[in-house]
Length: 108
Image (cartoon, rainbow, N blue to C red; front, side, top):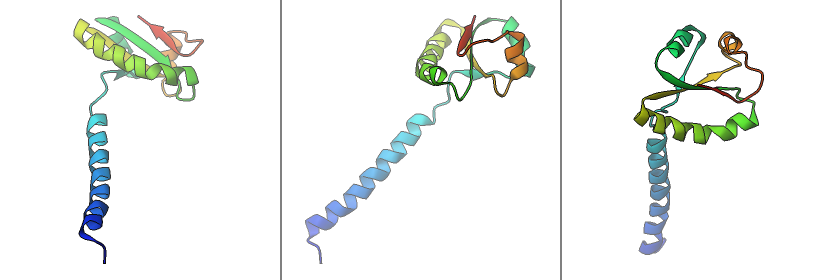
């Protein structure tokens, strides 16, 4: 039989791990301020102020831009600038309208 101190410590470790996982899930649950555009929504770009990133999921440069793009989108909310992204692999028509030749590409 384990000593009372060891049993308490053995129970605390899994509970702490569970609490950490729950807190991590809560912080990630916040929706992204970056809007995801599709081909059917391109006319919205003609209204208001927009900054749009064209990216591909397989692009390393696009991946490294994502954290900064998220921060920029939060900043854009305060200034009334819509910040969005377009996956060129899923929206080839929309990326074709903007003649995307390199990734990532950012349009204003």
